[in-house]
Image (cartoon, rainbow, N blue to C red; front, side, top):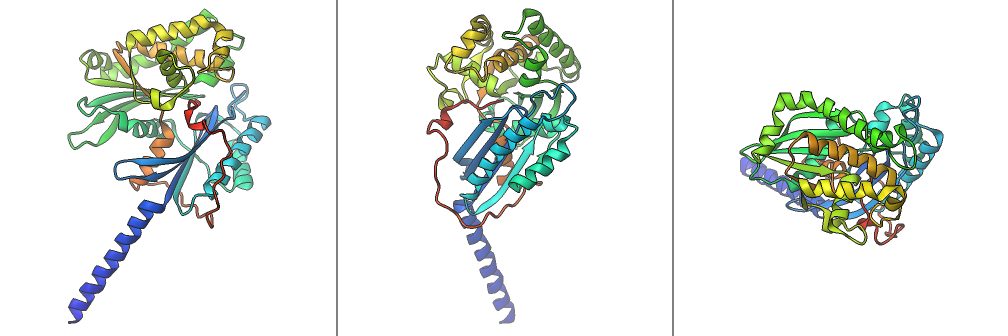
Length: 372
């Protein structure tokens, strides 16, 4: 009788735990913040049986890494802009309860900044958010995880490139027979769209500057190519090429001829190598004024887009790229999927009672392109 009773208690305890998990699964929220060199991006989501459902997104261009190439310091104005955006992120997350987990990562600008610790302390003091400065390897891994839903499971390898504001991560991933994905190798270019645009200032990038970026990228990629023999695998259609970043999504939108950016139309499309070369040529020929006027680029991205085009062209000419899958997803989505699969290094943030949700951004926020 005692054994039976113990068994029943164990069963009831197990059942209550399962019920709690089911409640958390339905009603709990996850949040991810990606603080890049150019922008601060937040996503709040709920898990679904196969992935997750977006509840709210927020993106603000803060240019945290503005001027960092001169002295490796985050400027006071950049810090002020960024903390202001993070306060909005904090306020948004407070409205979603229970918040099961959140993770706040910072990338290239904070890795480089000599005054990063001072910035971290200011963030905690002003927002109560704990920032995690991640390595370029972790950044590459998260980008791959975020793009996993776009992987073609019949192709066993993928080359994922993520063009950021201060660095560019390129990862070679392999899908195992059991469906798991792991990174075979990665290489990080020590520059992104913000650092390139600041290194070559002016209304428009000169041909010499553009070609310099292409040549430097080719030089960095040679060792990576020699180690993994990527060119041959791409020729044999054994590697899927996936691009993620504001630059890549802009290329997708311009290729489609969209009157304004539409995430649903762009995310997941495939663009041939020839079409990619043609759309880059079109953007280059627009000139700075034309890019500023273009509805899918605009003034805030005119200089960044041409810098990003140089990196994309370098990749597509170094390797015999037949097709590029455009991803309007990346680190934030990788963080969410990581947390929802109970990975390590997640943060738990109880924010108190849930408050009524009020929109504080344009209704078309989700239609806007993700910033680098």
